[in-house]
Length: 137
Image (cartoon, rainbow, N blue to C red; front, side):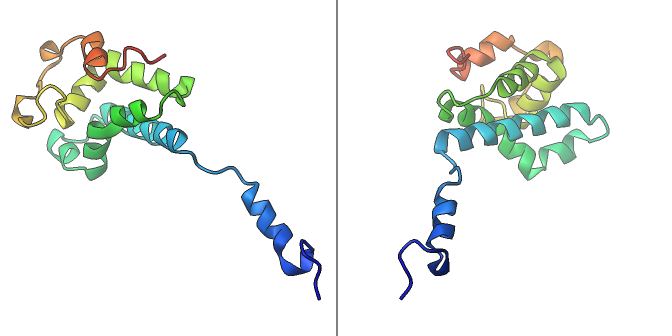
């Protein structure tokens, strides 16, 4: 008979799996938010991508619609890197315009009302307040 907890019965191996870090919900939301914002920023840098093809990208549409919801769901598990990426998204006119053309947070039910030029944009503070990101540090 094998002794409980011996290497032969595999329990040490199972114990090592349980010692592995697990994904917590808040941390997962923070990672997804970071990936979404990074993707949106990459779209702002891809000048060769047409507006039509960018709008048809499933990942871009998901990132545009849900990045800020993942930030809110992260409940403080956000890194300084994510904060810097969000600031870059909201304060760079090209990036902000790209995001709002994918998902106009002001009028999500009317995508044709999305801003078309940087002159149509509201301030970064307006968008941060609208998304309830003003508390976020």
